Image (cartoon, rainbow, N blue to C red; front, side, top):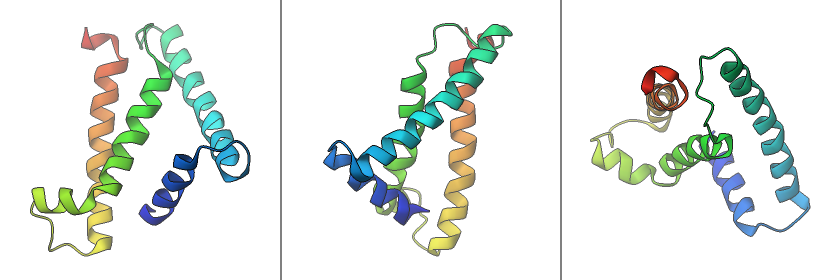
Length: 114
């Protein structure tokens, strides 16, 4: 939902305590807790490296998605995608981002990347 994401980004730029920004930060902390739990389980089982900065992992994920959303026009032009409808572009980017982030995190998290 790119429009919702843009709205969330604008609210976070304000960075005032409480209000909508406070609710966004609460949601982010809840997501952070879930991701931290998953990564720690992977570390305990030996599948993930011990030196993972979970906060930076989340920033990488959210930042990558945010950058594509706010620079959609550039991405479309650079990749010759101007002919796609918004729905086609969203579907295309969802698949593209999923694959990109999975590959990036697999390389970052797993011990096989050493």
